[in-house]
Image 1: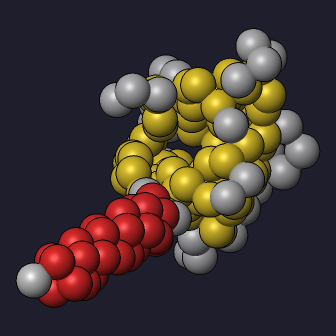
Image 2 (image 1 turned 180 degrees about the horizontal axis):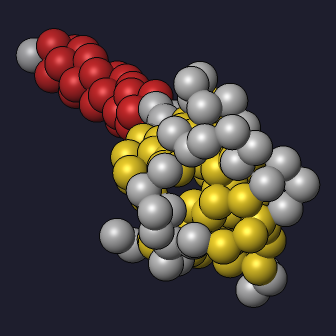
Length: 144
């Protein structure tokens, strides 16, 4: 009788240990899945340029991606500027332009670990922003 009880206890303990070891492994695979947040559309003040996209988590932080559209006339371009606050308390920026008037331009920014990201869309020439900008709109913020 004692040997049977010992056998059952050892099997139960082994099963319990296997269950404890298997649980963290399944939780680890669930946390490695990338999360995605959609943003936009954000339009310039004359509505001839707009951008939309997503923020996606990766192993090296966050990535802002999307498309910039330009519906303006000849010799005009649409510009999108991103400004984000890093986890070290510094602001970083990235700017993209599209002068095609018919084809959206894809863009991607590896922002790393950030606390806040904002975007604005402006109109301009092929070399610089001339005005007609939207207000800064939040693309992503930590905690919702």
